[in-house]
Image 1 (cartoon, rainbow, N blue to C red):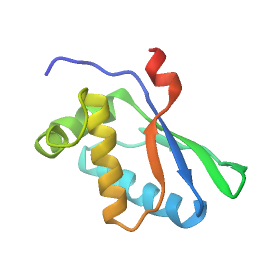
Image 2: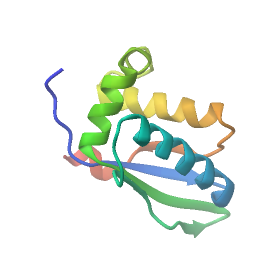
Image 3: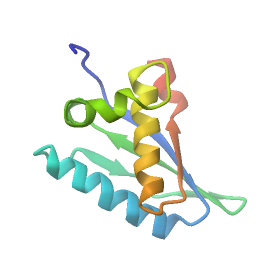
Length: 113
């Protein structure tokens, strides 16, 4: 796999921001540590609308590449045509398994890149 990635921008949407953000931060932090990295992601403060919280989750390209190397088998088996879609599906599944109710998807900004 010779693809290099720029920063991944994900939409993080939830009706319970505090508990879901705590789960997401813990999970992403553990993944980051397992990849031997630090300071490679950020979850923005949310914007509230109609009972929902909307935030952006940024993952560095280096972090994404390391996650794909470390968890490639599971990511490859996830839903999606492109590697980006499979990675997001895998991350969403991992969050759900930990009790996080947030929905994540590629941000519209990512599709333009």
